[in-house]
Structures are given as structure tokens and as C-alpha cells.
Length: 249
Image 1 (cartoon, helix red, strand yellow):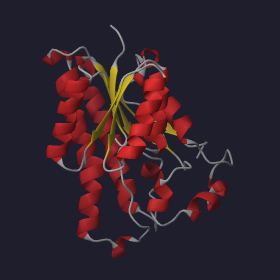
Image 2: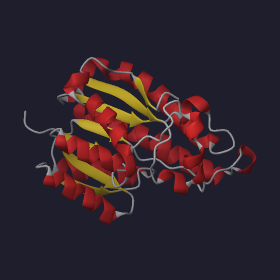
Image 3: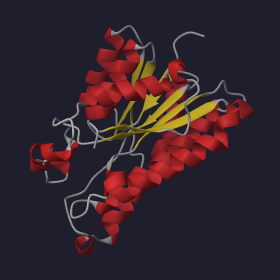
Image 4: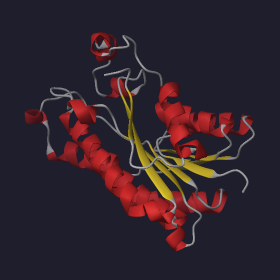
């Protein structure tokens, strides 16, 4: 088999972009999903091509099933059979306590962080499962150390969505293990990416060093290395794992 094909949701920046670059270096062709920042996604695609691999940009809001379905169809047409999925797309909201959260905020969080990941996995399984004529593959879900600590007073809803991803990863790994598909999750700790600014709590990054035993922030590239390892044949007997990349926290 030649180069394998990988889809990364939320691949235009941060951990997703770093994973695309690392995956290209490891020999993967990469489909880079973004919701609206086509320029950033195309910049990542150029880095993939510079590494000698094929790349395609696939805009879609994975919180909308119709767009998600169109995204997979586009990958089918442009790259061919799918061998890997990194479910990285996710959102946080402004830092808030539970009594300040509304139904609209929660619906958005569940639609993207949870339902979107489940539906992406569904479409990947339909393509990769040996029971459906596929050749197998690997799914890596991006969870968070927040799933363990709860993020009280900041974004408890986000941590809940990631705890659900942990549960989903464990169950799905067992469900498809006999069909040639491995399913794992990476749980980043406090990583120096743009997501903190989106929560209106960017100062938390600098103020959180005392919480991290290694006394430094993680980088997107360090998380990407773990993701790409889980995708690789070096992790051939690893499924159902929740891998913390959190500096010992």
C-alpha cells in the first residue's frame, strides 16, 4: 500500500495544524477540515505538499450533519479510501459558571464537541471497517485533561463534553476492534494555543504554571507527536487508550 489518507477535523490551526504537518512527515496524505478560515487551512495544506504528500482543504461545520457528510464525500473524491481520522475540531465558550450557561451555549457545545465527533467516527467506520469492505484504520479523538479535573468556574460544559469523548473512545474501541479499526484518545493539558483566547480567559495560560508538575506549558507539536504515534503501525496493539499529554498534571 502507498501513502495512507488521513482526515483531520479542525486542522487549520493549533493542534490540528501541527498534527497535519507531523502526519505528512510520517507519510500520510492529509485532508484538512476547517469551518471558515480557508487561508489558514490552505497554508497547512501547502506545508503538507512541501513534505511530498497530497493535501486537500475541506471546509465544513462538523456540528451540522449535512456539511459533515459533504466533507467525507469530498475526501472520498479527492484522496480516495480513508485510513485515519483525527477528531480534533472543538469549541470552548467564554469562561462562566453553570448558573450563567444557557441552552444555546450547551447545544453548540454538544453538537460540535460530542455529536460531531461521533458522526465523524460513524463515517470513518463505514469506510474503514473490514466488515464493510475496508482495510482497517485508526481513529484518534482529541479529549482534554479537563475531562479529569472538571474546569470548575471556567467551562464545566467543555470538560463534560470531553469526559463523554473519553467514554465514547473506550466503548467504540471495543465495538470495532475485530474490524481492523483502532480507537484512542489524546488528552492534552494546558497547551499554548489560540483556544484560550476564545474563552476570554487567555491570562489563565500564564497563571497556570503552578498547576503543572513540569512547570511549563505544552506545545501543539508535542500533542501532535502523540497523535501521529497512535495513528502509526508502532501503536498496532494500542486501542482504547486515553493518553495524557499534560506535563504530569
